[in-house]
Length: 228
Ligand code: BMP
Image (cartoon, rainbow, N blue to C red):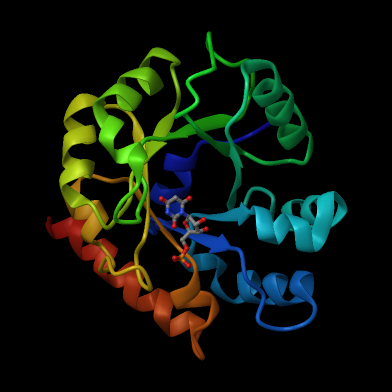
């Protein structure tokens, strides 16, 4: 049974979702397993991107999730942007792999009715990169996410004004914000703008000391949560 992302944040007092896309060394599964074991107490969840899935496949993915089940939230980010029936089938297969949640892209606007799934589904309404066309439709896509009854949305951490805007529109939505670290947003800044979780990849994955990198991020987040 998939779990609630907000509970992981509360229990861990960390609002970090670690993005796994890159594996600097040869054996991604062992590498990610070791990294997660070392940093798990500072993570609410792990987001598995398409590059990661293509490296370790369905079996490796199942194995990784099984190993840390209940200790971390597992989020699938396979850039789903298709007709309703195909997205529905993708979510079914993602759920079978053991994931707790999944990100879908909303710009095709082909989903006609609420999706049938136990997964928490997050719709992307803004991107962290500068010139994304998606951002021209922020209000429309946020309204669409709400109409579909999605658990939450993805809004770039590099766009605090957009986070504030979406938070006003969707008061109960769980907002996930990628773009902290390498893409320029400071740790804690997306939370300060109204996001619920910050998605962070390379600044941790490529760090010579991922643990202290994460400690810095979580410290900044706790300051926002407790003093903000
Ligand atoms: P990094 O911290 O290494 O920049 O990683 C950010 C992660 O968030 C990547 O997995 C990327 O796919 C994802 N992401 C993003 O960077 N911007 C978006 O607008 C949407 C994303 O899913």
